[in-house]
Length: 429
Image (cartoon, rainbow, N blue to C red; front, side, top):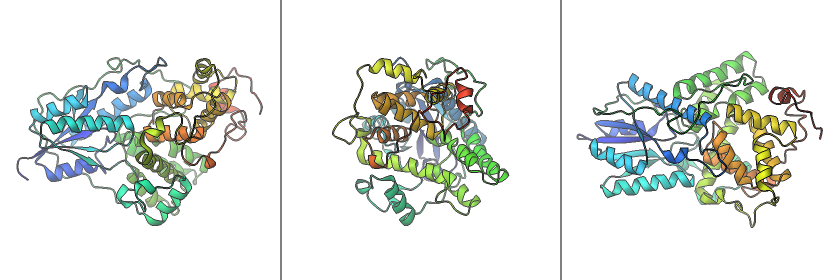
């Protein structure tokens, strides 16, 4: 190691703990240059009049980047924040700070991999290497009991083989030192207005709130187990708390391995734990994206043709996204989504099934709407799940059909509908 500088390009890995690119960079270089780039591509307008990233998710992202900066400053480092095309910005920063190599975590979805390829090509022009790491899954790709091309299309088969034949690697330690070059201009966090968005309004009906960042993510994990202990492991509470760790997982404010090892530490049985199932579904869809790539964004998916579609697509889609379908549970769910950026997994399945199977609207429109609105959006989980519900994704024989007109299980007393749709008349199944 001789006067070597490595640029660490943060994307969806906004944490210090269990972060391989950060740990490896501090071990291999004299100095590290941590960088986050706000790419305007992710804040563009969409054909439906919305934004690729909605204001609730954007606020969570800004909070997460701010927390990463604060945590780096606490250990004597700094986060350089830039705005623009990463393929333009990163080579300029590399030349300015005499960088020898750039590290980043590999992504799997089409847009994200295209951005990586553009950055890699731009860096190659100045004779620099973009080194890829794998750090978004519970099970490392190299530890799977099958090559990517042979991954089972069935989630149940994937789960059984992985749990039987693979092990989860230990979490990585925090780097021992952070030596950062003198940064002339560390940049500023953007405001929502600068991103073309408005400040979200807090809704008094929400029973939870999300604040971005690794600091809150670790607190949330502690809260999960404290609540579980206090309630003697009440299943409903555990499922709800587990699902609400997903926003921090989506931005990598906490890693799947950290969650896994906390479960192991606190629980005797882990295989059917709600958090374990959530992590396995995340892994499953990410690996499916490695296997099938762009097919997840095609209305036909993996099948011969797309589901049947009604003639009045625009009108029906507007009814669904605005919560005016006439089905109270569906409408209440859509109101909660727009107000908070979060709905339960069962609710997601319900409103997706209703859009595709009852209203016969193009499922990709629903996936795009969720992309804008969900605070825990991640490409693989979102698009993979929508293709699955539409019957054009992985093993449609496993696709459960949720009857959105019957809220007997999800809202047995009607309290949810009363909260989010107080003036609605209930429609029985």
